Length: 213
Image 1: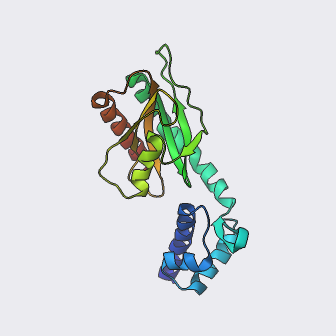
Image 2: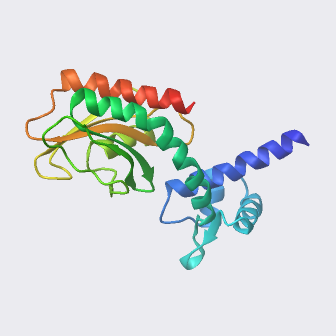
Image 3: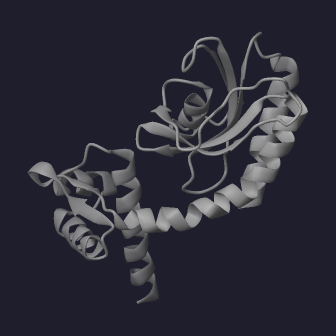
């Protein structure tokens, strides 16, 4: 019985993970195929998660994550902020650039924590809650490394993709189950000295990962 209950719970979690990866929605049949279960099992899982508000049916019967997920994510985000902020503060002060933690939300990256250096004459104002496509900007591209299963590329660096004259560098936060996030910096002016900045950003991402495990 315990094994059956554990398997059901795991499948329910997988339903939410799969729907998070497909923001445009899935049919029950398509969901069943991705879960590698029969349609009856998928239907029962969906019905249970619908009752809890964790799955909803949208246009044309397509399945999406429900608003109940926001309550869960809302409880997790303060933990992410608390664990990441000291690391980002040290990074910002060390390299003299605005440091940030971004998490994925469907096809977008969302700025969850932003820390500006205290000693520089000017720095980039990076708004908490800012959203941008994952394929644009260093932070989003670093998150894509996780989503694409890339375990070797240490960081992404971009210039002018989100703001003219801005230089960004970000590293994925790997090794935290269920989390797609990156730690990065952004600055204006000359290009980032990757030989100096990149190792520090990668180290900060690793420290955030260690604090969350």
